[in-house]
Length: 519
Image (cartoon, rainbow, N blue to C red):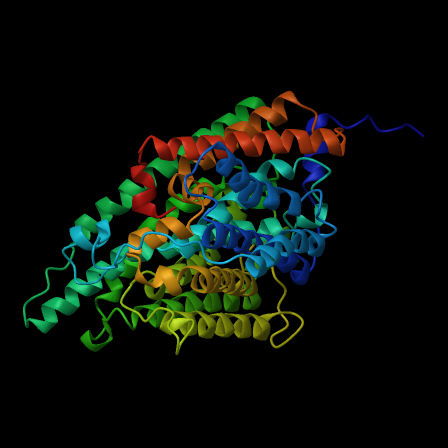
């Protein structure tokens, strides 16, 4: 019997990231709980000891360990023992909290210094920066950037890698979370437009709506840079013979193309929104409208999947007879699910971003926003459980086709994560001395510098992460490396990326693409 020829390194790499079945949702929740645990320790160090003021090299190192290295270790060295890592982070926090008192500081009255958002915005609605949103988006970006390189090493468990067809995994959740978090901040433009409409209605004046041409131009401005990045990635991958996971998005498609398609559809739905009855066009009803829209799109897509041959075509159908659609069927059809996730994120941003809500008080420790977050979290979790294969409709989760259970799982997870970060901020930075601080000062105190950098400079950091990942894979045999070698490379990569993000933030550089798309 003739032995088959040994596989090339590229074939081994493709096999390494293919045909996985994922892990349990409970394990994913425990692993990702490291981020809120790290924020608790940060909050204790800052609120009790003012450790991160001033912010010097030692503070940066601790910030890096807490908010980047802890996440890296949770998906590699401690992937089998996430509860132990959570305990190692929380025990010092509990000890410091119980053995120290609040460090006194000079109080800046809340009305003495208004945030830049308040002073410059001509709108009555106030959309200030919020620490818990920055922390949430920053951790999502850290997990994404760390995982895209870690997945190429054996120290990264295969159950965390993207699932082939059905199942749940950390990286599957990461892709959807990236889209959801982008949607959260993209709600700003809709909120400002709705606020202007409400003001015009109150004055009994005609609202100057944004024209179709202006919306199309705005969508193109957001999509074009991402389209270019997608084409650059496509040409680079093909030119270097880089290992590809074809069943992830297709032969030509990649995640940048998915992101580039979002703005035109988002602007379209924004135009449709203003065709609704005037009594529905309020800032307060916006989250409900977009939640209904997201569920409707995902639900309609699921009905088509179940009652036509579309599901079979995406998963096992032949590519060649259908041309471009066949070669890229995963990317093209999963876009429907990602659009629903993005719109759900926008709906969530509709009640997260405005500041005219009750904050934590003695009578209500979590404020009106806290109750909204808890209520929406319960709603999305219940919706997911109804659709999931273990309950209700008994549908399986599939990131490959981005079906209804995948959409609901992603939204439920992210809403719950945001709730956790909000409650931590309320506990440590909304009472006592912090209650008298201005919004901007409280934001600075409650926000880790590393996570702020990853959030603010998301796109350039993500691009650099992709370039570094490519360099490592083209110059180093990741498959045959030992765990010590892998961890050394990953720690160096994480430190370099974190230093780049923080350094970029210090230069006061701004990426206009981020503001337009909300990434």
